[in-house]
Image (cartoon, rainbow, N blue to C red; front, side):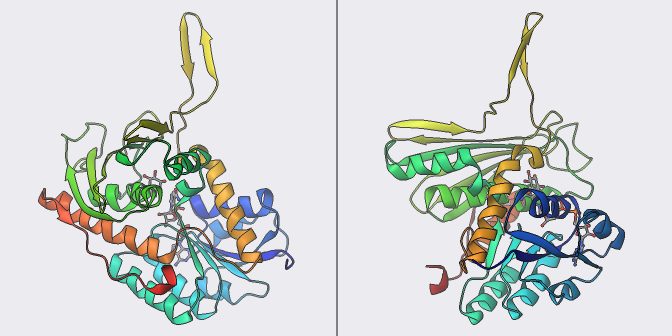
Length: 337
Ligand SMILES: NC(=O)C1=CN([C@@H]2O[C@H](COP(=O)(O)OP(=O)(O)OC[C@H]3O[C@@H](n4cnc5c(N)ncnc54)[C@H](O)[C@@H]3O)[C@@H](O)[C@H]2O)C=CC1
Ligand SMILES: O=C1[C@@H](O)[C@H](O)[C@@H](O)[C@H](O)[C@H]1O
């Protein structure tokens, strides 16, 4: 194996700063070689205490910095296409936070760009695939012990939505995780999306259609319902129950310490994804570093990122129209067979 992997991290916000910490202190075999953020002070704060890490306000300058072997993209979605294109042109392996890009057209351009390189370079940050409970569920479904899956019931709740979060983002940003989890757990494409809109919660910002009930139909007839509620007010909860021909299995109930006192029992509810999925993010980045050092690319692909965008767009149209909308996918290139 090569010596430690020098990583350029693009974006030093919530996710970027957490990934910098993870690469520096949690994962072995990697070092943070450069960080770029247009907010230079944020970048500098994220790398405080890390020796030999260069700080930039320009992402492309960070890719060209000495000692950079790979890239972790944690900038906002609209900046991903330029960053991935620059990384591909340098032949640099990438871990890119979801979403792949702003829309499916940009996603398809990235699929084409990677195909022109002729080998996979990117892993997309759908971290559910690295959560131990989700992996257990996937193994159980793949074993066939419960028979064929018939339905998935999913819950995705956030405490509150960040400023600027739109009704469409409940699907494109939040439900993107259930889109990927569905495709991965079932090994099937999602073919149609419908969205039901209960009355909006008084706890949601004015005009935000929150919560929503998003329904997927898959190529082999599985139906998936997703409750997305991003201003639940009380906690971060992600659950998934697979109902199969010979039983059901559920993950995400939370298994924290239960405290019983004064006639009551209670347990903590995680408040955000950085806590709920901490182990999954660690495993995701660790497996990316290990695979990259071994010259391999594993995990969710650029194609998976594109497919998630195409399903999300069908969802956005379903939200606007109230109609069931079919998903349109381009033909899958050989590279992602
Ligand atoms: N996997 C997961 O569970 C999660 C993934 N995300 C994804 O992570 C990415 C970042 O999200 P957050 O950290 O929450 O956002 P954030 O707003 O906290 O941070 C984004 C940072 O990127 C910087 N930035 C803007 N343009 C840039 C550019 N061209 N190059 C480099 N940096 C740039 C901003 O100045 C900011 O510091 C998004 O793609 C988001 O969808 C976010 C939350 C959870
Ligand atoms: O990816 C994420 C955010 O971007 C999204 O906005 C949240 O709803 C999700 O729970 C989180 O995992």
